[in-house]
Image 1 (cartoon, rainbow, N blue to C red):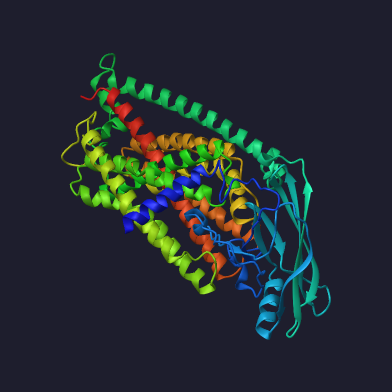
Image 2 (cartoon, one colour; image 1 turned 90 degrees about the horizontal axis):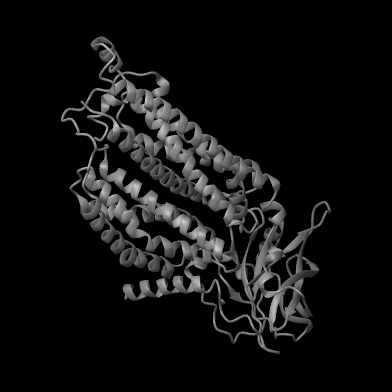
Length: 585
């Protein structure tokens, strides 16, 4: 049964990718008089975007029309808290509706308090017509002292039509009524259809904000980051080439120097640790899992962002999240292959344990945060609480798709790339690590290593944060693709420099240092997230605060894995290169 459910939801995920080009419920083409469905989504406070509740959690009433099947949401929509419910309003294509009363509510004290609370906290709601989002405000507060609270009771929908397709929808709220116990509130609506010159392919353009995302600051930040990469790569290349050439000359010269000078020249430097530099890192199982997970996430990010560049994902609800889940499951062999190969090269013997931990590591991180937030959401009765059926589906995907694919990758990694093949022999006895200055200690190097990578992305992070935590639609995935590539380049260069300084101080513990140097970027990003919360948002309450900091911690953890893994790979290539070309006596 679970296998069937897993296959069913994977099919839904695959179809959601196809739906990026086709439609959600229908083909968006209407005949004259054909039914047009108005879906009610969620309602919540304006300043807490993620704190949403079902529309009818407030004492609104439905229209009389009830003869339509329930909307079947995708897994991505469920995870994003989308809960579409039928409004019950009778709307037919190109058939105007004059002002029509559809229900009446007598406000009890409890209902009046619910509406007053919603108006006081600036609640607004979201609706959908033909997949086009519509927003409306619940009510307004008067400027009297004490203030009076009013409820908007009339919805006027202006629908733009091009040929047989809906290309524009606007809502006008009207007829405010004072909220007080015992008041009779009459809800009404009207619909007008008008010709529009907007093309169907361009109907989402009104929701975008080019002046914000394509501002000169955004372009300048990209250019600045790119120039920083060019400068950094050139600087690193020049320093390392000159320094290493000098080291090679010092280490490999056999003539023109006396024995005393040679001995003095060989008393320090990275060559002295050639017998320990390829020693397996401490905690090889954990280390291999971190590297494998980081490279898997890097592949997922590149694939999803590339797909988003080609397809306008913002036009379909939950499509980006659905695509991410699908690609992550498909990329499971990558994490298994890298982690299994690295663990085998480190001499690990508990490969089954490593494979299972590799497959479950990231899902466990997600579950720990999601479960905590979900419990709070259930307490608030928010739409962000994940239904039991979807939770079971996620577990089925994990158990019957991600875990087997990861195991296959682990087996392939152990057998195809599990041999050490080291340029230098590893000494039986570890070499003592000499004392060094405080700024050459691994913790200091690791902390400093994240500064430049963070500097290359923090402006882009402002746009990403604003689109997720505020009310902007993020669509400039070309920018994010470039920034991600810049981040990878900067991280690789910085970690190579950090590792060189560490090795030159005759400290051979470069594996963890290279990973943590890259991963420390996430520490600075989380500090920026704290600043953003207090100075750029007006969020409040336990639910929104826990949601924000919980998922920002998860986002930063993912960034730490990606940057740490890239840092290790770049440093590993560098270390193998320098120790394979130097002459070891």
